[in-house]
Length: 103
Image (cartoon, rainbow, N blue to C red; front, side, top):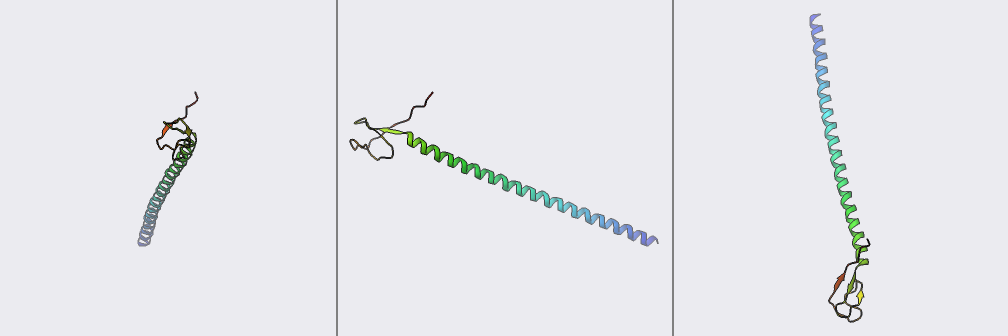
């Protein structure tokens, strides 16, 4: 009887220890999984911010180039920066005129 009680206590104790070990490893696994998912999420947010910033700069450059005009220093003709030379006198020298900002 003493042996069976002792055996029963040992079996319960061993079972409890096994469940505690399994619980510890499962919590560790969940923690590592959550950390990995958080890292992946934060990395994707950084990438999307970089893409949005790049698109924003492209739009700003496009509109800025449309607003910018060049003045020929020889004949004072104002023309687009897309043209390689003055359409009036064919000079290559460019003086950039920045648009005035409204107040």
